[in-house]
Length: 355
Image 1 (tube, rainbow, N blue to C red):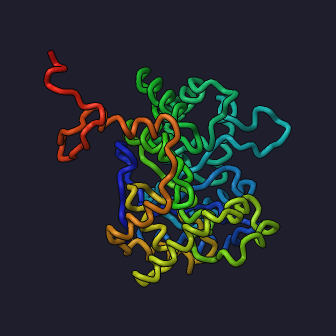
Image 2: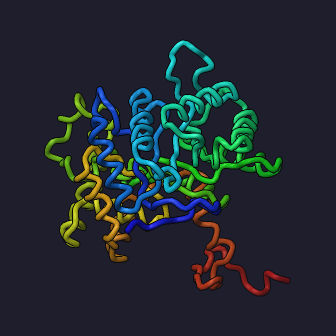
């Protein structure tokens, strides 16, 4: 039985394990339509309701695969939360075919709805920030699409925290639709989102949806230090991570805990991410991979294991995060507030200094 969560403070309830479709479609490294339909059927049979795609996945083929499945499965549409994305162009050379301007958003939505064979989207993500388009134009266009009944909710993917906050604040002040969630890369190998994006989401009440929870497959246990340097030609954009010793430190720590608890490294990595209160996007190419990842929902890590993973992967907060981490001691040192005891400040004065 799938577990569900509210997406931020909205009324939208989604499966904590979301089915990603970037692995749907060929040519390339995706699966064929028949396999993709089997994956969709198994995910839904196991109670999942959250399907994430994008207009540019497999040049639009991923959306078509999902749409064909929906068309062949009567009455399933209303049970599902269908999310897709805009910004990426499918027509190089046309400056208005992509991006986040009004003309582009409307055209991309109409294309996605045709491919998905849907009348509306449950969640429409801005795939990435378009720095050439004023954010007010983007938000007003999205507000109109919600008012027209073509979109239910909107969210931001791969966007700086300051831009998310700006867009959310301006939309809220104007009583327009505002993003309910952010979609970000988040895993034991990528925690820099904890500097700004995660705190911004928590402050604004936004849901968090993590893509690449297994670090592009690195955390699944298929790579080891002995093969370092041999993956670059075949593994493309993940080769920089495979060339770093720190990556294998995390892989080995995850594998060690997996052996202790009798689980796979992938299950351990997914279990850790669930402690962060986020939804995770599962990208699979076979039904067996899907089952293994969904079975991992049953794994709960002991506090000691969570702390070991935290210590091995804790990111540098940079400035001002590292400075601000010292402020509670400076401000509240020697006091216990809300059950938290703060160490005394090194700048303690005497009672005579109050005079």
